[in-house]
Image 1 (cartoon, rainbow, N blue to C red):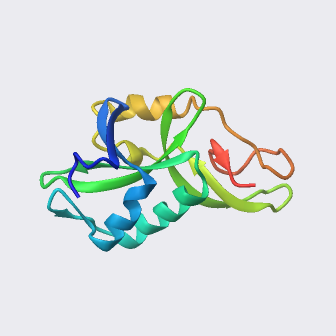
Image 2: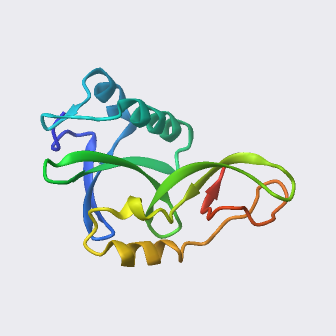
Length: 149
């Protein structure tokens, strides 16, 4: 697949050029895990991200080149009320009611590697409104801007 494919769009996020994959591209990449002649590493993790995006439509799958050899780095983007926010998924348990579920955490510094000012992007991520436990409305043990219900 090349970057001009109709299922790939580009956008500047946190000052960095990021490519977003339309879910219709997922099967193509599963069958041929190559973008611009560069093989996709850790395809098993990327497939889990694809499954998640197919289940939760407020998320998108994105990628960008990183490093001397421009290896593709994949990340999930969550659509907040005003922007697309990079997130890492985590399994958590509420310390109040023992609810267990998945959250989207925007505060992992590694999410912002390759950004022109990754620390400013991380500071901005800490400004994202947090969500509480969907079962008891208590605070969750990790920074969450989304929680499964």
